[in-house]
Image (cartoon, rainbow, N blue to C red; front, side):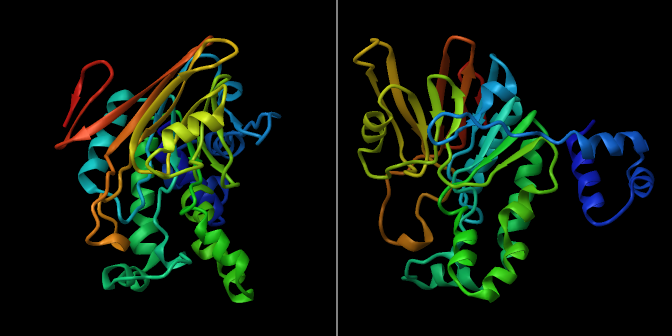
Length: 311
């Protein structure tokens, strides 16, 4: 069944409609409504340290993954986002990983505002500027994948931190602005990872994380800290790769970052150039190994691992 129909059914049920009302509204059988509500994806977490989401346990030994790095809606670069979505539609991965600073959440930030453009973000309606466009992008992603995983980045976690660290008023309205409630709770074939910092296990030798460092040597520092596992990281917005060898087994290990999909000149840093690069990543996972490709977006074009040009 079409994923958008599934999502509409879940939203209708959440609004209080009974199965027969939903069946009539969306022209699906009552049994299908029951199945959609019952067959929600169950997230499986490994018993390894940091309790990563265990994709091999959920997807089997062979599958493909597409990663959207650091979009920062509404501060995403519209052209880079369009190319990434087109590439995703072409690739049609089994799993899509979003989050990792999917939204900017400026109204919930702690650091000081230093220019009027940044300040104007506080006056924007959070629903119209962030939640609605984010949902539209997630809808497009879900059209072309079997499972969507939302791995929280630090910006994605700002809303919960804001509510948890302030008084009763913030806690009482948390559900109204919660990303989990507004982006994830009524979606089929979707996993919301509730704890910021939790890794995603792609293969026994490869993890996906939001990021431990964001400086110019982030790839090398991630490689050193990851020790014996390959790691895909985000957070830095730079496109970086560092490859070494496990001293004990001789196997190659790498730390890779696919850059970002946000504006290359952020609202908080007007006047300062950055080294940020637009891109995305794809990963082929097999029983014995996995391979990750970082794809650069340059001048409105991206070349996929099979040579296909996306523009």
